[in-house]
Length: 482
Image (cartoon, rainbow, N blue to C red):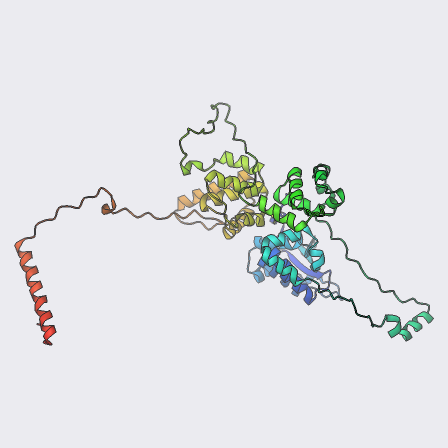
């Protein structure tokens, strides 16, 4: 999905808000929020949900519109700025924890925030997007712990006799009274687990060539029924890691059960993550920028006899970065950037980049320019630096890679002109101070010739040595030194 967060310009700190709840929020809801949703919403989103929960209007009385509070109050309670609040609210909306409604009356614009209870564990873990997002955020070990925490304990009924009483036996008098009135008691029904609501629409799923995938899986004896049952997971991996149909077929073939030819979702997710989130993943080549009409042809690629290029010359030009930013997804652009610089990808860099792309706060091409800036100046994509810079770009409405480069140049010019750090989402890279090499460290260094000592200096040194000798002798005899 290539969506992004709506423009924050439509929200003002003076706009009012009211809070209501569509579901009953219990202590169990709090447990679900803490284990399943807090890693997805982040600390600010988690705090925002709880602040709104304390303001839920009683459903027994209609809301009084004049009781609205300004967003300024809410932002102050969070201790954050308007941009951070807006991003946190957007996360809650994307996770179906909050639905926001806006309206304007004589007093002004106001919002009604409708809270929703979190999904039960069974439905949550059947959501491919939510499951994969949680796994990436907390890691495989913690993800398994969370699953075990909500695992239902099954009691083996073998050898036992059920001696429980039924409803009509215990409440026979009440049942007879109801029947005498001509009313039929409602039969108890067991509600089957509903299938999870798909996160991808039919139009989005139609962009994937399912017929080609099934055709490629025929030799592996994986039928259409299995593919349709795992369609949400397959499309999640396709959209998340940019895996095409042929590569997806190879992944399914390599991860399936060797005995039953069944698709194993956990193994498929693991293999996709290992293959496409490591430095060894295949990256499509990026075309070099075309020369201007009045310029000569571009420099041919270096051959085996071309001298080694200096590290400073490995930094790609702005035109090359723009070309790559518009044609590569962020995960592949990260690899492209590191390869151009001759460096390796940090252990947590792919996860950090994906944490930003999943928020859909910036277009992917702008995220790529952000990656270029961070890797070039800091050698690595750090979570805190990336978040600060992304917030700065959101505030300045940076929505194209060209605007991103212009914003970086303007920042650098201000920083160089003022000679002092500029308060912004990013800063100039720190340079390691260089100490001047002393002369004696030079391999060709020759010590100067010693100067002869004059007679006065020799006499003074001899007197000092004689005095020191006498003091040592007096100290050895227990006498007081002179």
